[in-house]
Image (tube, rainbow, N blue to C red; front, side, top):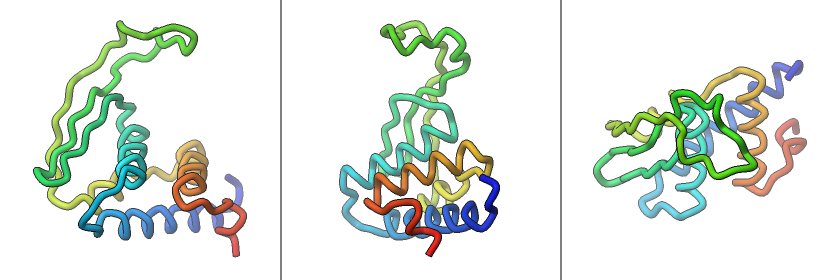
Length: 124
């Protein structure tokens, strides 16, 4: 991501979508999948469950993924079960955002899938 303006717009759009999606009373499956994708990316986690009423996130954090093989069923990955408490979902999700190239590219794709917009529209 050589264009820092594009990086900034993608991160600001992520923050905007997080703000609007975390303020909703009723969380749809699409919004929940969006939230889970952010947490999965940040923590390198699997099996995420967000309890919006109790303000908890249960997940398995993958400790060592060197044995991961996408062509087989991975039953023996080293994981740590984690149960996190958050006070404010909006602040927690914003704290999970990273600004490195790989993360920004992931967020661009996530925004494209979530908002049904093309990334090129973010540059307007």
